[in-house]
Length: 187
Image (cartoon, rainbow, N blue to C red; front, side):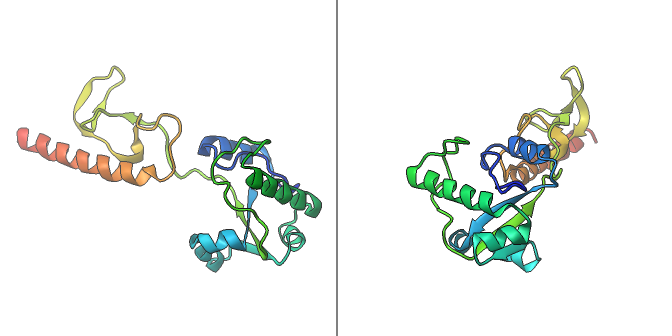
């Protein structure tokens, strides 16, 4: 991931909270995720992003830099540093230790503009394991249940990517079970 200067600015695989804050802190209306043909061949999702017009392309890094309006010398140096980090299995600058198995050296090169957006709510209504809503003193509010993003406390102040669907399905099912049980008991 690079900024307008064509330089990395964060460990790309850090938590969403840290990466989003770093992108927002650039005050550059986002950043660019840069990759090569080798990476593209391993991630089918890129085809969807390309189909909807989000992927920029350059036959060389210099061409890509021009396409996305970043400094070409810095971009080339950044990719060179990345390739050395992959080769040495050590990201000295940002301490990244995973997802470092592919050098970026096979043109054409690609970039996708990224910008943090709010798409998930952290926190909210407190619930117990039976999805019953708790008041501010931790007491059950009889007959009130919650599931999904509205219910807080499962992930703390950050979540692992991909967990929102499981949270919604599991706690939605649990809330349904508990509501049916409550309704049968309070006819």
